[in-house]
Image: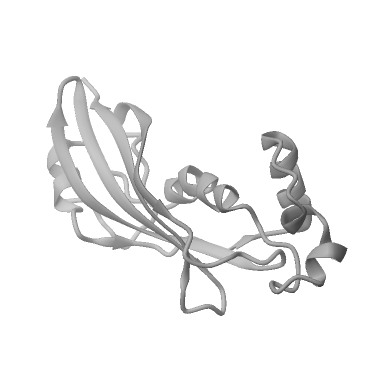
Length: 159
């Protein structure tokens, strides 16, 4: 059986994946949300809305400062989840997408965020295994999550 106390968890078979269903993994280490990272994300995506990149203007807004893009926080999902769960016992893994995504609360620049994940299902599908995972990103000092998503991955057993 896969040890869920040592992170990242490294299942290597369908049975080991199904044994993880319903078990919370995490949290990850904290990730610092800096203005430099938010600006780099804005440059990479072309989303230069002032609430993300103009600290002076954002300071006068009801939010009191710049906030990270919701998609910035979501885009950290693969990297953060890889610190919780690794599929290196499989031939390969592909991000298949998301079933649901919500951004319940903003992420002010200067915040720290981290993730908890729970495997919801692992199903045999043509060519591999489809893994659905709940990912909840929380902000330090807040009771409300900043991202709640249901990610879907496909893995192929080695051999």
